[in-house]
Length: 281
Length: 323
Image (cartoon, rainbow over all chains, first blue to last red; front, top):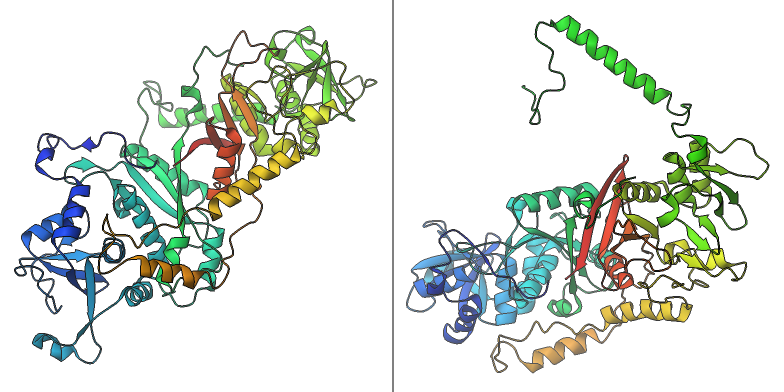
């Protein structure tokens, strides 16, 4: 699959206005160079960012978070980024770790236990370094976080914009541009290989209450996802996440030893792929 | 809840004037007729005439059947030609017997040819799985030419007595020790005969996985001098991980291609066969893992690979491709 080469599947009427929106690569460069270090707060399983309109636009266009409805951020200590807090962005853990570690322009803080009353005074929060952030996310999201994080980073580095694939019964869907402009191209399910599964069994520090499907995807699952993908005009991709058996998942540098293999699966209609006259026997 | 019918006349639609009880009686009669036909299928006499049927004798020492009388054109895309004789694999015998084009005898002295059930049992004894046969028969009924992966279409008449073992396929069909992989007339599969070559290929796959360059998670987009990251973190990460050796999954990958499939062709010739259209891997237990899929794609060497799942006699085929 590699980098996106086919033309995007533009939504109706969006191709003409697409030139008004910058490409994701340009926006990410802008995010790194112009906005400096962004401050976010970890709460309720997500990272909340108080942003200016321009920053919120950049984050939304690159699928790095969504606007939070007004009032939902109540009780969360937000630090202003730029001139002030005009909009609030909610970012999932995988995207937050990507911005913090790969782009290096996010600093996440959290409320210190026992000092919640000092939050209103601007105190009571502490910045988390990458290691602490990684372990906090693993504690909240379980083994699935590491797998999703690896896959998200893998596809982002190839130029795709991954988003949750829950509505298609998958783990991720991949876009070339913002979802408001284009339809997604791929539906992705994540499958850990034998080594990764063994490392999950040995790992005791992640939150085991968050279930990770230990069984291999069965043929009915593949068939169901494949047919669904065809009906919504997308291609089905299985991302096999491979890792050493004794990998220490508590160390954030473990991602450098994880790799993702993409296998595209499509249903083959044997009776429709006969190229020449068939002497049916 | 109302039934959802496909477009067209309803199959159970009763003629005008027919009441419900007559319609039920009519349906019962139709069902009984079909049930009787299914129950008597094993003992039904052959529909084809004896003179139109090819005859073969099973040679136990070669695990193949030798055709001693050929009729029609069905052997044009089936079997291995050795001199003037044609030799058939077990699944080919089973398919031809099932379609009443071959009479198979287990011994020259037998007067009664083997039944279809006996041929199925023979096929199981020779190691051909039922799902593999279902996939083979499915493709043959559609008109494709289907052959064991790596098997030869023609064999030199002066070849050694072990020719059946050497040319009967590779990978899943052979132990890979003696198979040549490519014989006269087979131009698509490159020789994968010698064990050292094969082992090197498996090792290369493992090596490729292990030596994949570590993803530089620590680099920002084009800015090496950022405050957050830099070569110090990168070096620290490497130093930490090199303190203990990482164990990779090095269990042998057992996935091997099953069949090679050719497009239908009236003028197919064993001496100059058509190029392989795609390869088939039969796997009904579960979909192949990432390593197995990679191994299959490596074996196919650029040709499409279809994975076949047979459950409850339903054959589903999926195409897999690398990223």
